[in-house]
Amino acid sequence: MITKPLIPLYIVIPVLVIILGVYTFVTVRKKKKIGYKIFGITRILIILVLTFFINLRIMEKEYNAEVEMKNLDVLFVVDTTMSMWAEDYDGDETRMSGVLKDTEYILDELSGSNFGLIRFDNKSQILAPFTQDHETVKDAFSTIKIPDSDYANGTSMNTAIEDTKALLESSNMKEKRLTILFFISDGEITDGSALQSFKELEPLVDTGAVLGYGTAKGGEMQYDDWGSYVRDPETGDHAVSKIDESTLKTIASDLDIDYIHMEDTDNVKYMVESIKNGSSLTIEKSDTVSYKDTYFYYAIPLLIMLIFEAVLFIRKGKL
Image (cartoon, rainbow, N blue to C red):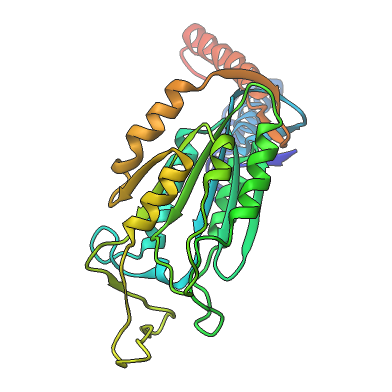
């Protein structure tokens, strides 16, 4: 069991203790029989205890619970090279801040799907294989940090092909599921490599999009928290990264999916709605631990106690 108090305990406990203390003090001072006093204090104590447990929000763990799931496997492949921290998304925000905002929207809108995450810079890394727990994937996104400038060796669009193929193939082994791919990058190739064809992945993808970040004007890249910017080794000026839409459109064409230039989350909403409309719902066993509220165990007796108090008040004109 876990607890998730609605109101912090350091507020609730003193308030309930004060209410009990005041009620007890007033009741004891009344010129009534001892039995009447004990009965009254006991009733208010029960009401306060039930209120405390409802606020405590005790939740029971459930394993392998049946949940409503979408028949979707959604794979994010994200460029995490230095250029993705260029400051030209929605004004002067970094491209990666846009990626994190836009992918969170997709995760929330397609909740109930299986999600996977691959990042790539000098090498490819599977941060999350397909999982039903989209909070795990959000946590994986939160681990993405700007690469060390000494570690960055340029960008290749080819780095993640093998890992992407492996996860797409694992999705295609499942029956009656749609495989969705979001390839996310600025398209800039800086390591001198030639773009490989993505056509071998096309049969493994049902739909999705290549999401392009950046502008033709470009943006400078800050690589630490002290305002240091990447410098062009030839000029000594701040280096500027520009989107390469030609490369991104080629990848989209190879995969036979849409290319979307991302300037705002609204740019991807039509695609997400299209995916939702094309999905279906199934009842499946969840591979994650879920939690069930138990407040109703205490709410029903509390309601009975309150009704009882109301009846006493109506009959006697006082509590």
